[in-house]
Image (cartoon, rainbow, N blue to C red; front, top):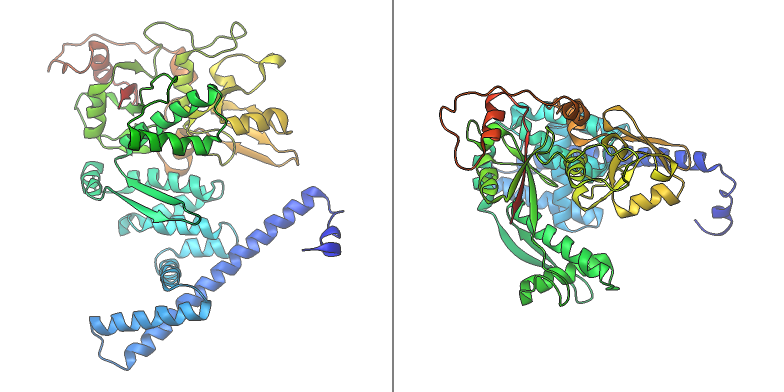
Length: 461
């Protein structure tokens, strides 16, 4: 819009204007649904007509499909690859995931969210697909496409009948590196690698970037990440001159029973999701230390400081990173391990340095909270209720509680409950004896029925 047309909207109430944007967004979703439904109908009709004139053989089907894609691409003024993707999407939504198409038609979800559901459902066995779709559609009402994709991966792990060990071994065979050319002399490198290796690489990059930035480097953070990774690979530099070396770290939450080999339940790689038991135990064997997540730390350091100290302890940070998983601002997906710990009720306003008054916020959203008119309060169960400058309310939930509500996953007991009620352990005969990897405490923890996820492992890469 330009000139008078644009300024004619200037007297609209801001809240009403935003509601108008939301309404038009729903209309766009409905238009996408109508387009895909029409495309699916045309596809079926055209394929039938073409095949009516020839013998139905695999070769004839391939020729018919090629003809269809070319016709569609020319009519819609797009490349044949893009046309093929649209036809595949339309076909999936009208034949397998009709509830997703219905959600798109009424504006409950966006086209990007529908694509996520289709992409992730493609690898879910047919018998589990209806439940997968139903649960993801509910989650899509509050999650951005990126967050929805992460949630879909977690739900897929719960519903997939094939063990994660088998799937991981197959997936490892696909690891690779390739380059896509970009404009203006730039390119993108893709590196397909095991998730724990990827997290370790990113952790090494992020920690080096932080140290270089603090030393006064004026490059942007994204540019620093790129340059640091380049220097790692091309020059073998783990840190620039004058900057201390860093040791990359991955954080894994492992059920004790998995750790000592009593079962093979998946572990959780912070910032990624489920990993297989074999990989988790291999990482644990390299870990310099263990910390029991749901009991008081061995060194007795406090987990509630009240008004005594502003800065949380290392143990408090570890618990919050594992509990929050990501920045707790609506739709932000930055891993909590790279975030700051914010006092929900500000320290200057009397806020306490306690677990139920702390949350992970990335630097950007930490500033938004304190400087840009947003307000937040922490409710029971770690739920954060945000209120925007226009009065719109958004709630964010810790990942474990979200998965329990939307996916039926087993929810960990609240941290406050577990920390206030120290578990009572009965000494039992060690038969069989504990493996050398773990201490008596961890072994007894498993035998006494400690909750899954009761051991936190910090493993260096």
